[in-house]
Length: 237
Image 1 (cartoon, one colour):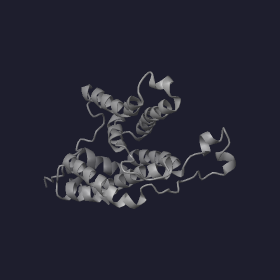
Image 2 (cartoon, one colour):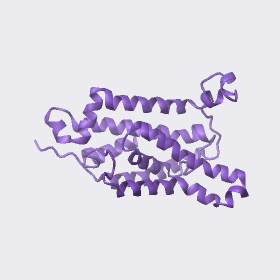
Image 3 (cartoon, one colour):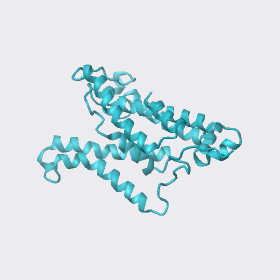
Image 4 (cartoon, helix red, strand yellow):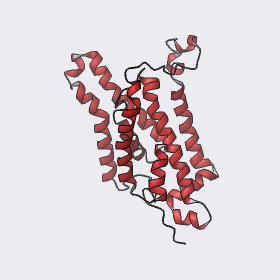
């Protein structure tokens, strides 16, 4: 629903995408706090592994079968998106709309319609990603639960050069950095003597800034970013 608000403002009304995104972020944060008041502190039933307990609880089997269905869903979606973009006609159309919207429009494709579909899909995936926090990672909902990780997700797209498989690797790399805070708190002085726990918690965000700075300094800033990224569609014919 939030992504469709973004779509109407940016695709139909040609509003600035960055400003609209920031405004919706602030709006969404406040709205989630308002709606989530009745859920604060209440236990939420999390998603258990879909595999039999004998496999999920086995010391070796747990490495492959001990995760939430959303974890396996993420692997499936990465593979499907990669295949869709490179191996289907619809994916080619989507890429054409992102690279040269006027050319796609001139041969009869609805640029705005394709972009609405892409925004809807992206919003759905972002919603599932956010829902993973209370449904998988923690058994409860709290204000600010995602901790700004949506911004890391945006940076990951740039970091991966718009390649789905690279994005998966980058996500697990940043996830690994995020777990260092937990190990630092659990291990006590052996880790906090190197860096305080707050510094370990900041590592993913520091790595995000560093990655974006390195990319910006390179010859191909932005990697494989679509040529029409963040540009409103203004048909010439």
